[in-house]
View 1 (cartoon, one colour):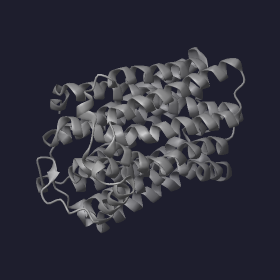
View 2 (cartoon, one colour):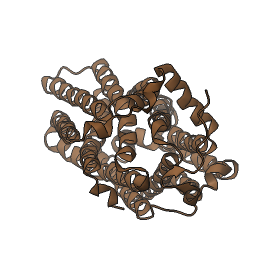
View 3 (cartoon, one colour):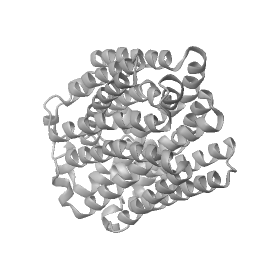
View 4 (cartoon, one colour):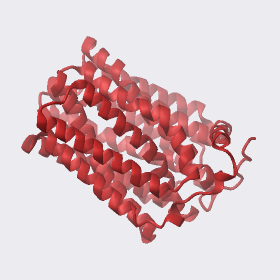
Length: 416
């Protein structure tokens, strides 16, 4: 599990990623609570969430092309710097008492745009640094840092909001991105540069990446699973400020506790997935835990108390992490390095389906209530994962043994 950390450059990347993720999850908590405090409107909370997803839809795929052509380290340093500036700007506006809803929306767009460039470079750089023999280790360790930060980030954000206010929380967020940048700089530039794709034009790179995703059934199925989970499964997270403020009545500190519960379950699930870097039926595990994820969302929506809600969130976080880690490992095993940035950008574009559902989910929550809205999303996700288990045979029957040294034994030719 920890073999990839023996690689110096990956170790720097991992620690920088971990700190960046802590800042990211603290930002999610602070952004949602700030939107709620500014307007006391579930619709506006949903609007902020939706706006944060639009840059990803527009920039994630071009970001994948960039990651396959440019120095991935440089992309990380630059995008981390933009997120740092965004955090400082929010802190200053809150401190001055001058923040307006439109300003929050504008800064959300800036921060989300930098994240859309950051993610394909970060997700494709790890496997590049460790080589094909440790891809599973690298993906699992990245999931551990991502989900572990879901424990630390929300917990710290909740404490900071209660003790020093939202402006202090955003200063902390900016500091996390400063440290993430400092740890990324020592990565050897020659290790982070990808020159395979420069033999073609940018447009040819873009089209070839889409062709590969379309024509490789395992990759296509893996992305469909991610799209299903992200379009319906994350509505509970988008409406968490509403649950904390209006349904459970636990305030900003309670919001941090609820998000931390998800992080605890996700960390346990990520460690569990990391312990089994080779699975005989990885595809079946991906889909079965996807069904469990949907059931957990439904359980949270119907929870009668904060204690039951926290237990349901731990369970759904565990199921979500195992399914996501296994699914992402499938994608990395099935994709050669020269196409990984583009394949991962398509995969991560599905993450932006979650924010896009924020506005309709927020509006629906104002009409029928947040619990009923989340209950519907959990039921839809459960049914969808059951249908995927029957219909996506290439994913369901995926076995690690079909792949040699981290790459597909017979990689299809890239269509021209």
